[in-house]
Image (cartoon, rainbow, N blue to C red; front, side, top):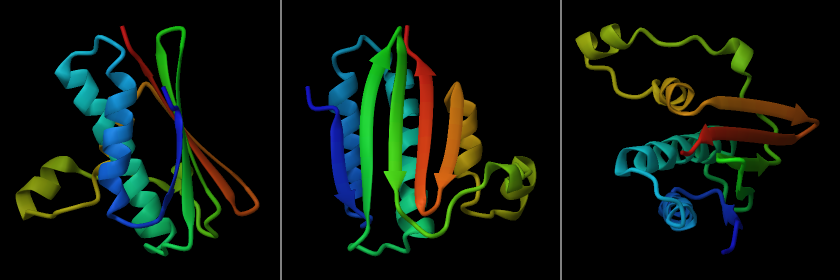
Length: 137
C-alpha cells in the first residue's frame, strides 16, 4: 500500500487526499465514525494549508505520509510556505456564539484538536510540518 503522496495546492486535490487516507485506512477495522473523523481532521488541515498558507498556488506542493505504529495512525503533512500555523496564537472559538450568530468557518482546528489525540506543528525556515496522531483500536 502506497503511504505517501505529493499534491499541488489546489482545492481540487482535497478529494484526492480524502480518498488516499480512506484507502490507506481500509486495511484497519475502524468504525465508520472513527474513519470519517480521521478523514475530516486530515482534510481540514490540508484545506487550511492549501487555502490559507499557500493561497491556492498550484506551483506549491504538500507532501503527505501515512503510517501506523503500535496502533497509532500517524500522518505527516509538509509544505514550504512562507507562512506557518502557530498553535500558540490559536484561540479556540466560542462554539455557542458561532451557532448563535450563524458564523461559518473558523472552527476547523477546534475539530482537529478534538478528533486527534495529538497535533504538532513545527517550522524550520520555510519548511512546515504538521503531524497528527490517532490511536486506532
